[in-house]
Length: 468
Image 1: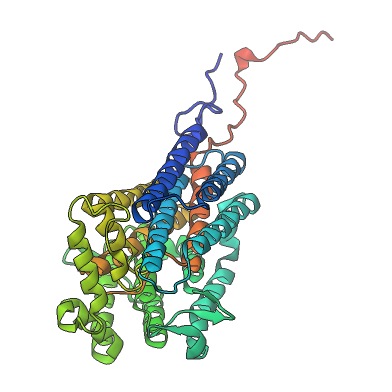
Image 2 (image 1 turned 45 degrees about the vertical axis):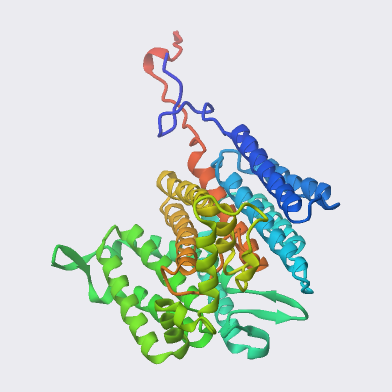
């Protein structure tokens, strides 16, 4: 008799573990760390637990229980590490934001408590995460809307630039829409729309873009006529830099496209062309735009501008130095001395109170999330899914690298926020959608393929004697 039917990876159909139990245990561990960290902050700063602690514990637990049950029902073969990694980052972010809220209250300043607001945004993010998994059963269906999503992404990206500065400009960058006390950063959602478009476009054009015209210094250069897409992406990033003065989004979008182009064609020449265009654009921007020049000069010598633009970075470096290897402990530092610590510089607050080891541990959690996304890209069977998962995973990695580089003085400040960790509704909600897409792709990647009916051998077929 023939052996059991197997999927292309050699696992017996129906025997592939879903690993939902592993996910449940890890989510419980993430919730435990979140609650314990909040308790430590309350006891260290105020000496007692706040009355809302019980309600917070139930709320945050319910969020991840709902998310887990939805994944178990509608994406049962999804990667078991993605959701727990997100839960841990969100929980740590809520803890640090709450700690900064208490610091503001102790200083006597009349400040709004942002941790409850962030919890509401996290709830909305989980709701969109759930809605996406329930509605979108196959990630390949997104490819049908690629050009529509491209138009939506460009509109979202350009909208703040055409609005009055009174409702779109914050700290010199026109990246917001603020109406009636409500604010949104449309570029966070534009990023996802454009990555979906990039994946669909590169899947369709990958054979053409992979053609080489000549070899120079060991690199197979593409044909001149095929440089159009990368030039358009470069021009788009320059336009964002010019009209919105948003260095972060410009760098993020161009970097994502170049890396996805490399993944699609497997030609290193595209990386060198991208680096050349980036270097040229950076040089032009430094010479032409005053705000870019100011950021670069402040980055090169922040202490020379300590009374102005360099104050934030200097305070961040002092905080990281104060934290040392093991940190001052949750509630034991002064992270509120860094301006805008809840959003742009929340990594500095983590480094001061948890130390270098704590900050590295947070980076490792990001690495786990990115690694699972890249692993999904390798395993999924369709080209669109491979490109989409790789682009989304790289988007997280690139954004974290740029943000941490700015906080530590390795790179100029860009204005980007740390995904899942920093305060900000737009970033948090958009990144929940991003992870929902990765979860959906990973479910398709790990799900056993439907076995075809086994051919019937002649010796196994029943025989019947027919008499005339």
